[in-house]
Length: 615
Image 1 (cartoon, helix red, strand yellow):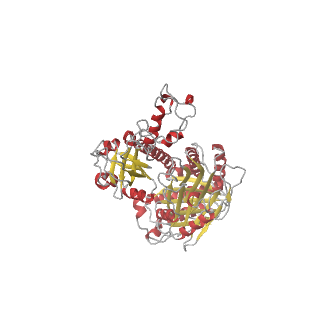
Image 2: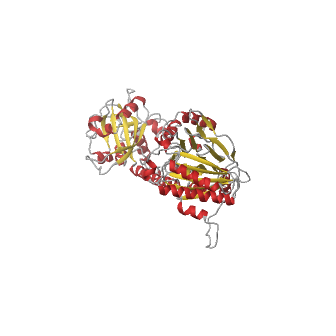
Image 3: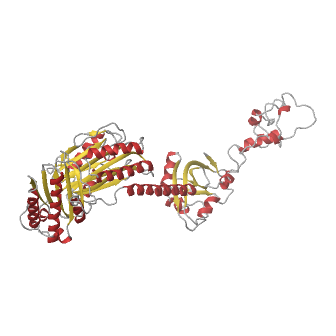
């Protein structure tokens, strides 16, 4: 780009303008024709001494070659001045740059001395003195970090652009508010011809320079900021919806320590369908569930919310895990057959020391033994929910005191460039070395697997620990059991056993009597309606007393209103009245278990127990 500072015209203007004026000059109406060859070779006649004569008035400023190149062979085809096409050759560079609404500054030399600023630049930053260095005359460019860029442009000869530079509001021009500009620095040659016609001009010799062009993009930046703010609000609303469908506070079982975390993936407003839950079933048993509805958006979150609600309802029936998954399978098909969902439902029973589970297309549970060994829960794993036509089954894995387990969704271990088994193996290694409380383990697993806020998939983790009880804590957890043999004579033995055990656990007289009454009624109900084998189990934790009777009959009792004349039917009603809660379930080997719980008073929860342990 050639920037001619002293010429009022762009390069080549004089030559072409002279040619146009010569063509446009009127020819004489009459007169003798010109000699055929006297003056044709040259427009400037030669002098007698063979030296060229001075140009005549008719040829002043003309270029012979230009006239020869554009000579009209036929006068009838010559264009009139009105018919000539428009041209920009006659426009002044000063006028062009001065009329541009963008910021324009021209500097020259290695020190970037100021040669020119247009009116738009002066309107924003105020007038600038020519001839000074950019650091002195244009300090705003130094503040915007453009000087190194201008040096690079001057050395390389290539234009460079920086986008969305903020120009703070301030004095010196029309800067009542913050503005944003995109600056382009272009290499030019600043050439001088004749005396400077403008007092602004400080360049008096040809120099390499830089043209700084600043286009205001404030409206675009503000629109982008508003769009980002709107997207952030939409995402916050979506995440709030997602979190509102998850448990606000996890239930904390007596025998387990549980923690969970959920991290939404990506930065868009769409959320996923990852979910988890912890449900206390009674009699010390706990259900743990985690699932994932494929896809993203409100629809996936809505399906997730319905499945989680259904799981809680089915869990209250205290069904085996595979039956819960079977019910969810049918419900998922009814909700939306096009949505694919996976789920694993597990139940922990402290009396058995095992985790019984059933999986519908979900990733395997990982269990860490007290010695640090991590193993995957083996099959069975059925197809995802909603497929139908599959008979789900249950499996089990030991989870005794000192053991831990983690349930998780695929966002934790799945990567686009790796096999998912590699991710599960990485999780096994991380889980083997993740010590601490369950919430700390969740955080460590996230960090070990490289999960950040920019992760592109939702992640849900549920960690449970079955702690070993020692010292004072061990005194707060006791078990006692009695096999019930014979007929009606088993009832007085059961009452005597319950009375002795509860007395040894140093309960208050009121709680002692209520526990003995509940044991007596449940044993009487089993003797009357159940079949052998029968067992009475008493269990205390740091929060409750549990009385449970099992027998070989699988018919579950129901609470009903007994008429005044009825001699039976009041046992369950009495238990439901005096206990904090009660329930019944079928046992895996056939038969049933009927139980009730009594919440311990605060003083007895933290008080020291003495006397012989019954179990």
